[in-house]
Image (cartoon, rainbow, N blue to C red; front, top):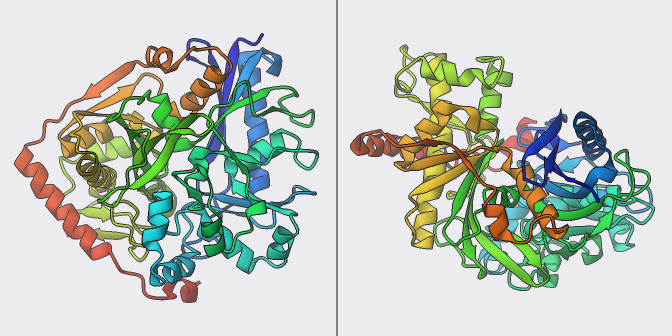
Length: 511
């Protein structure tokens, strides 16, 4: 029997494979970035074939670094960027178009038509989501309308659609030669096509979005005993590896942070930031601009739910400083640059590159830098960027506490940006709460590994997983409460100026 568990973390900017041992410790890791494609303002795409090739590459590399083969692995777990959509041919495995990424705003007109038709309350009641370009359904509808021959192929049963987990599992299990077309409840809950109460595709919603039901994958729990299926002989990683867990990346991080009790919450700082709070086994709808989402499902027909605050741009704002402005050459430089000044110098940065998500949900908001004077320099902008990450998280946490009726004493954090100590200290100061960083920061992959190991019997239950979680460092708030409120009020003032900026068809005509 194998002694290790592998986890794929297929994210927005790249794909990672981590091999864990049965104590939940990292044995080896491999990572590969993929191309970010921006055909027009507001449009974001990925090449699905590149993602599939990179996934195979990092799996092989991680096993080589660990000195093991697939025979040494007890199971494989998958975590993935969630709302990003792929459509491909069942017979050939060739995508009909590039993947439409969760950040992409091309389906704005479709969303506006649905809002104008008064469908927001119905969709919110069934899915826990708001009408926004963020989610998969409007992206699939756009592809069906715009890609020549796709709708006809879908109606014939030749075209498949799915989030990235479905694309990877289909390829891992044989592709055109009998690949499994499946997803789990967490990813399905992000499409705007799954009924949160039945955990199944909703025919009425499919009709609203004019999406043939036969395109969509079968919905399964996030943890499969003994597995969903095994890798095929065509995989570079080898045949016969059991695939035992699938989760959307943010839900995987919630599991990796072992937030198994009602009221426990985590925030992941990646391309965007995503705060989730466990709310138990009933899908309570938010009254303050948050989403209700499936957190994880361990058995058919059963699910734990979460409130989620999704922020479109946080780490991506640091990438923008690097790639678009050239202020830094590496993301890690932001910490020292921002620390070289005592404050932001009155500069506020609202990075609404793709509109604003929770709690504002404004598709027409756009990025804004305000408060500039001749005193302002690149260090102030770097610090304002870190503070923007923290203020956006504060807005979400405020809404979450109101919805849940719970005041959080602390927040567990993870993701690539949490290596930045200044960021986490600013976050503690802005929240006025304790921020806790775990020893293992790649909690997305860890969550997928936890459930894959749970399915394989490596760990007996969730309590055993909780025993594995350990704190690395705690950040405590030390900013004066009156100053915190003053600075937050100015942030809200900046947000008010960024909202509603885009006019009808402005981005299309500027392409």
